[in-house]
Length: 226
Image (cartoon, one colour):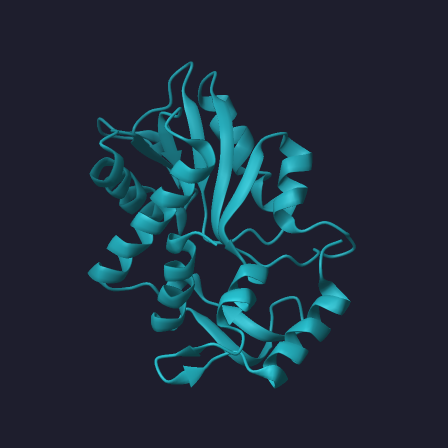
């Protein structure tokens, strides 16, 4: 596993964004782990988060793109911090763009978007915190493609939970790929999280012990993507 992936897993734990225990998800499922991507709140955390996204995007998609698009609302700061990190780490200036929930009808920046305007020929990487289903993109993709003649290169999220959506057999990222035809990826998968933390002391504590590992395995027996 790449070094930045190992560091990101530990970063999620240190930031109290990735939690282990007993949680009831919005879907009603009982889960032994939970991720709250809204838990990144400090300047240091946001700086590091942008760096991890930038490294994963560079690793997956290279430099052949022009715009980072972060859907409102959570995607707005993600696009900003990742564009900054990409410039600092790789010396490439990429533009950031986000949509507005409500169109602005006045001023120089009126319209449906924040940041850079999308232009014909732009290659766009979309960036989100997590993707819960293929339908999560059903508003965003038409909006992006309707703004200009752009190509969506792919989508990057922070964690692939690797579980099926309602009534499906595929994980959310695979659903997006199948529905819209562009590539999808995550900084890390839940499988990589377990691989890195299982029975490994971290700061004097084993985070995933045998008992928790058994609970995670049982969860994926029920809800894991095929």
